[in-house]
Image (cartoon, rainbow, N blue to C red; front, side, top):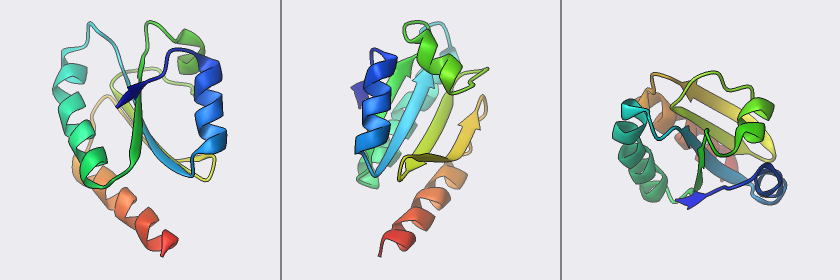
Amino acid sequence: MEEILNYEKLREIIADKKLFLLYISSPSCSVCKADFPKIKEIAERENIKSYKIDATKVKKAVGQLSLFSVPAVLLFYEKKEIHRQARIIDFEELKFRIEQIKLIQL
């Protein structure tokens, strides 16, 4: 999972990638640390490009995405956010949304 270090890079990714997953966390968040391997595993298994943002380092991105809590996972498809979960992540729901997108792409 590649780390995004500034808002401009996030904008480039949104413009260039058809489908990707974005994980936002904070170093002081224990839930973020527990959820990260699960999110990473889902992205790898589903063969989806994934990125992560440290909310304490890229505050402009956090503000532009209107994020108020971490961890957060956002799914982007064709330059639009199509799914968002924050604080409590339902991994089965995330897998379901990914499957829906894959059906659209067929």
